[in-house]
Image (cartoon, rainbow, N blue to C red):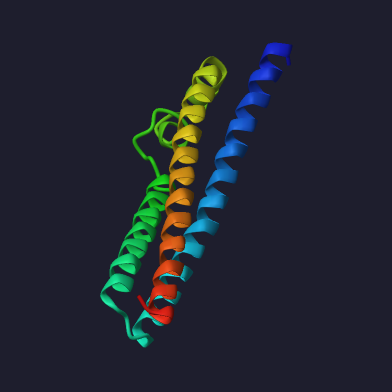
Amino acid sequence: MSAPTQSLSAAHAEVKAEIARTDNKTALLLAFVGAVLAGAWTIARDLPLKPLACAVGGVGMTLLIVAAGLLLRSVRPNLSGRHGFPLWATLTPEQITDVVTRDLAADIAGLSRLAVVKFTGLRRAVDLTLTGGALLVLALLLAVGGA
């Protein structure tokens, strides 16, 4: 295997590993957001909420729901993609060898763009989760402390 081919293979493996890491982080954050939503709903049902606490908590819950939507969107399968599984499913074994040999750099570029989209969605979801969680804490303080 030549040095450029080894470099392309290493870059390809690195991009695929980054996508896998991002998907794992997304799954963990989605489970966390679900648990926070369930816990907040359970607590909110048992507290006498004042209008300000309801408003702040409602915005916090909305942000968490939007974060969950972003997370789900980032792990949604892309079956119309031009690389990977969807393409390979339509090719013969000989065509797969030709495509992989010829288009490894293009596949790296496509996967890299996919990784950036996934990472951006995850980062936005983390920001929304932090903001929504802070608003839920504020709503809890308003409900318990009174305002």
